[in-house]
Amino acid sequence: MDASSAFQDSLPVSSDALLAQLTEWGLNYRLHEHAPLRTVEDSKAVEDQFMVPGENALRVKNLYLRDKKKRNYLVTLEQNREIDLKGLGAALGVGNLSFGSPDRLMQNLGIRPGAVSPLAMINGVNNDVRFFMDAAAQEAEVIYMHPLVNDRTVAMTQADVMAFCERIGCEVTWLP
Image (cartoon, rainbow, N blue to C red; front, side, top):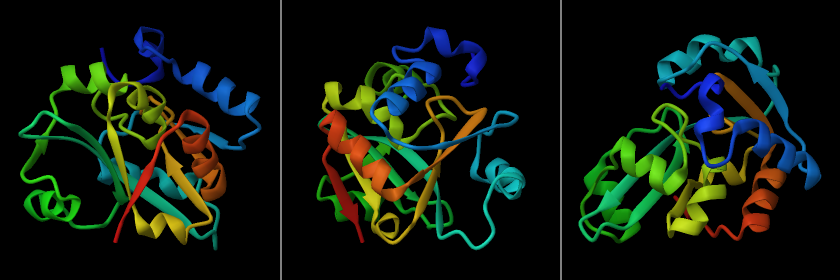
């Protein structure tokens, strides 16, 4: 199974259910459907199709990480930000980090590789996943991310993303 909406019914929370929940909570989003995007490069190839010119938007990349004590982290960064896992571990104060396995990703965030997103914290909060977000998100008007599948992208205002986090009880730790 891949991370597209064709298999969303096998997820703990489907993309459709997530979008319905966002609507029920009064959180606004613009939904864009597209071919499955697996990498930042894939995303860059199609983002012009749905980006609004002049919009102060943050396009993100997301990392599901674990430390040696088997603690889980979701780290959301501006898509062009360079990553040094050793430096990131030091910045988070957690030591060495490594990427979590696809099985652990499903177990802890309820998604498959290629669909990692802040919205996966709807599952992560119940599994003690800590959420870190690039401080650049504080300056963005809109944040683009996957709604648990990689053939859809939602654009949400930064305020609505923060309201989502508050609604699900997710603490956001800002990364400078």
